[in-house]
Amino acid sequence: MQTINANGYSVYFNETIYSYLNEILLPKEYSKIFVLVDSKTSEHCLPNFLANLATEIEIEIIEFEAGEQYKNIETCFEIWSALTELGADRKSIILNLGGGVVTDLGGFIASTFKRGIEYINVPTTLLAMVDASIGGKNGVDLGNLKNQIGTITTPKAVLIDTNFLTTLPQNEMRSGLAEMLKHGLIQDKAYWDKFKNLNNLSTDDLDKLIHQSIEIKNNIVLQDPTENGIRKALNFGHTLGHAIESYLLENEDKNPLLHGEAIAIGMILESYLSLQKNLISNDEYQEIKYIISDIFEQVSFTREDIEKIIALLIHDKKNEFGKVQFALLDKIGNVKINQFIDNELIFSAFEDYKN
Ligand code: NAD
Image 1 (cartoon, rainbow, N blue to C red):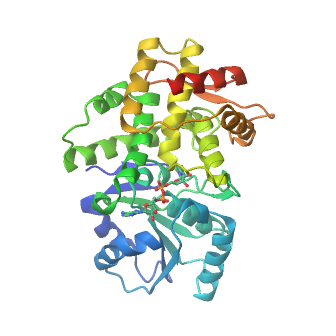
Image 2: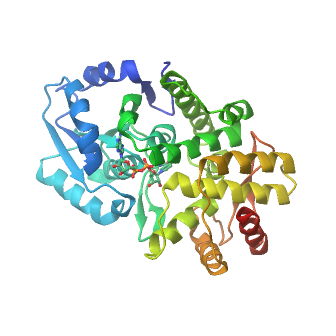
């Protein structure tokens, strides 16, 4: 599959990735290689990854516990310390081998350690392949508030090896699918239409869908790398989705949702808001609701839950001058950014989601 050129780096696919890596990992270029993994990618992905590396440079492995709850500054502190103890310098390179937690955290570590060292993302979940590893956004959570601390620093490269998906659990595959659906909804109606009939998907079909999804995200990022305008379209479903994800994470009596599962609910709710703003038709809304609900289980929210979720919107990163702003659909395949919405309409969106 064709290499995709991004802003200052490239995204390589399956057959080309190890030859690319082995060509650039030369002793005259890098002093040491640090492979960052979590406890699960250490088990499922690291052995195969290391077996394909052919370099004379010393390799050190740094591992942390898997899970969103470890995407925080305490884990960064441990990794910055480990890098120091293991002799990392400004010519060291970090290879982030994992899902979005590893690529977000590892990108942030690399962008701050000694004021910035090079890093490469090797995403191992569907979500990280089509979304988290692309575009240079990185960071960590602050308590339960998602991605509050971070930078936009592009990687040296992104390497997509879809073989890693063979060990990924089904719910994690679904979570990644949510971001692919989003890419169709915000940018490409023909791509969205492909998800209307997902039966009998071959690995080859999936690889093509992944490639297309990355192209869509990359095209948006290329137009607006620092998110002053059109890149906000990528936040469709995320304003409410992130608030739902944070709310369920911080309440121990609630079942947390995976990132994509929360975004799927956010996309249904924000499609309802788009309908109420006359930006999409009722037919479009019903189609979106039907397709997403067919893939993702319904979650119930009480009035009190919804009030607390709305209260969390004030921390959304798109807010300007204290106002919550939504990126809403403007027909399937297009987005209108900087939309203000009354809280009452958000309650009605949850009410409609229930039915
Ligand atoms: P994740 O990194 O937690 O991975 C999900 C689980 O799968 C983890 O337990 C992980 O250890 C395990 N895993 C990873 N690869 C595996 C494999 N090949 N086989 C078996 N298990 C494997 O979560 P995620 O869904 O990949 O990413 C979610 C994170 O991405 C969130 O923190 C979200 O905020 C972030 N994100 C960032 C961006 C961005 O632009 N930077 C975009 C979207 C999401």
